[in-house]
Image 1 (tube, rainbow, N blue to C red):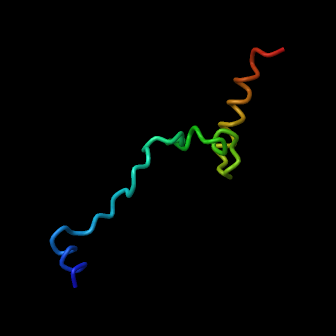
Image 2 (cartoon, rainbow, N blue to C red; image 1 turned 135 degrees about the vertical axis):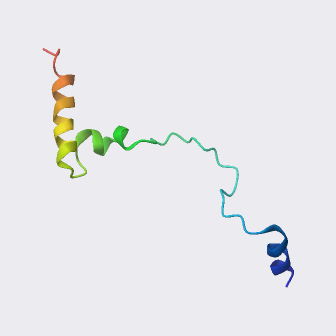
Length: 62
């Protein structure tokens, strides 16, 4: 019954638990993930964009 009373007084917190750092090196945008850059996730437009990125990267290489 004490737990129930505690919940009534303080509510339930569904937020982050613990002291984890927020930014732990994860990529936040899909556009920077490797699968999207290489077009490997199955989208036709992503494959086309990957093709253009590859052509642009190889433009000045001999």
